[in-house]
Length: 435
Image (tube, rainbow, N blue to C red; front, side, top):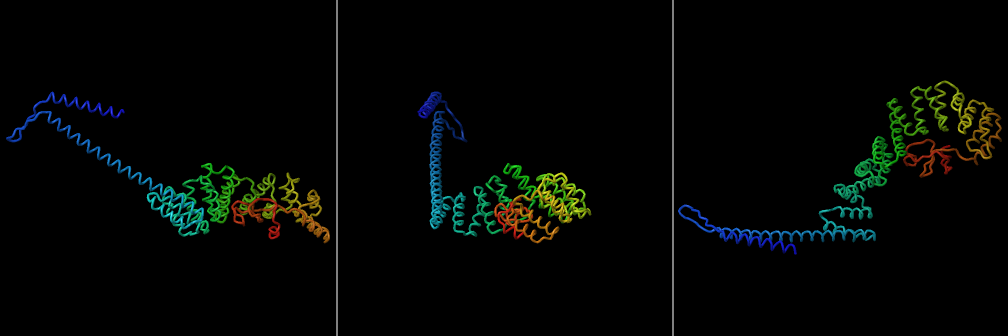
C-alpha cells in the first residue's frame, strides 16, 4: 500500500514539473558553422525524460535478471548442500549398520555435493577407514584434515592415535602437542601427553605442558606439584652424572613441591653423601625421620655412618632419639642392635611389636635374634614358620596392575606413569620374586 502511494506521489510530482516546464518553455538556439539550430526547452525536457525512463527500465530489467540468477544459484547450492548432508547422514547410518559398500558410495556423493567444504567428506572417510582398519589410507585422510580449519583438531588427534598404535611416541607427541596448543581443554589430552612423555623421557616437555595446563586451570595445584616434582626429579637424576651442583639445586626444588616423599629424599641423601656433605645429610635424615620415617632410609643411614666413621647403631639412636615409640624406629633400632650383636637390646626394642600375629618382617627379625643369641634351630624355624602367616611389609605396588617392585620409579615396571603406592601387596608371588 505504501509502495503504491509512494509511486503515485512520484508520478504526480513529475507531471507537475513537466507542466511547469511546458508552460514556461523558452527557445534554445545555437550555431554550428553556417547552420543555426533552434528548439524549445520542452523538447529538451521530453528527451531527457524519455532517456531516464529507458535507463530506469534497462536498469530494472538488469537487476531483476541478476537477482533471479543469484537466487537460482543460491537455491541450487542449498539443494546441493542438502543432498550432501543427507548423504553424510546416510553414510554414518551405513557405517553403524556395517554396510561399508553403501558408506563408500555415500562418501563419494558427499565429496561431489560438498566439493567446496571437504570436512564432512573427510570425516566420513576417516570413519570408514577406521572401521575397516585401513590405517595407511586413514593416515592420509588425517593429513588432509590437518589442512582444513574445521577438521584440523580431528586430524591432529587421529595422527596422534595412529602413532600411539604404532608406538612411535616421538611423532605421537608432536601431533598431541599441536592438538594441546590448539585446544588444551580437549578431554584427557593433558593426561595423554604426560603418558607419551613418560615413554620418551622428555621431562623438559612435562614441565612446559604442566605449566600451561595449570595456567589454563586444567589441572589442580596438587597434580601440578606432583608432575612438576617428577619432572625435576628425573632431570636431577640425569644431571647427577654431569653437574652435581645443579642436580642438588633441582632436588631441593623437588622437595619444596613434594615434601618428604621417600624417593626424592633418597636421591637428596645420595647426592649429599656423594658430595661429602655427610654432616648435613645426618641432620637432614634426622629431621625427616622425626616427621615421616621410612624403612628404605636404612641404606642411606648406613652409608652416612660409614662415611662419618661412626657405628650404625650410634647413628640410629641419634636419628630415632625423639621417635623411639614409633614402629619404624623400633624396627630400625632392632636391626641396628642385631648388626651390633647386642641381642638383649634387640629383644627389648622388638618386644612391643610381638603381638598375637606379628608381621612377617618382625618374625624374620626374631629368627635372626634367636639364631645369633641361642643358635636354637627349633626356635629359629618356629619364627620363620610363624612369619609365613604374618602380614607382608609395605612395598611399592602399581595401583593398576598390582605388580610390586622394591624401589619407586616415576614410570612403574608395568609401564604406568606415577602409579606406584607404598602399601601391602595383594599378589604374594611378586614379593617372592623380590625376596
